[in-house]
Image 1: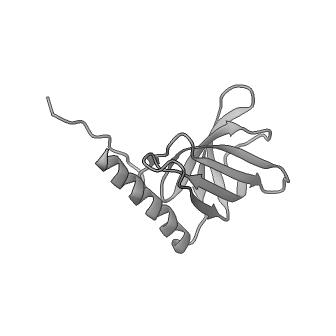
Image 2: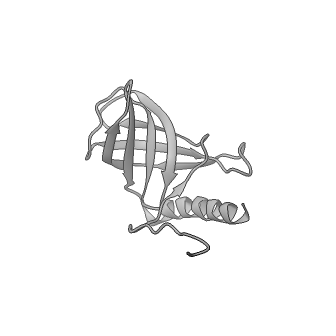
Length: 130
């Protein structure tokens, strides 16, 4: 048997888990209510969020602005804020009591994607230092 097992992701941008205290806020286009939820993971192309959302979410719905307040395991009080002008819901899983878990594909410029990449690089470094 091998000494280590690696998870292989077949996607354009691999995802990395975020610490449990990473949060996001967003508005559904055409609505006025601010929604808050947890950031489960992130990639350079999008994020997976989870929380109580009062609106019916479905793939194709546009959200924005989306503000990600991302933390680190080693420095939990240090917040990396990334503002995403717009994103598109790609997948929704209804859980319980209006709680939903859902994927968002970022609609961003390369300069904004670079901010996401910097955070991911820090998280990868942090995971290697263990």
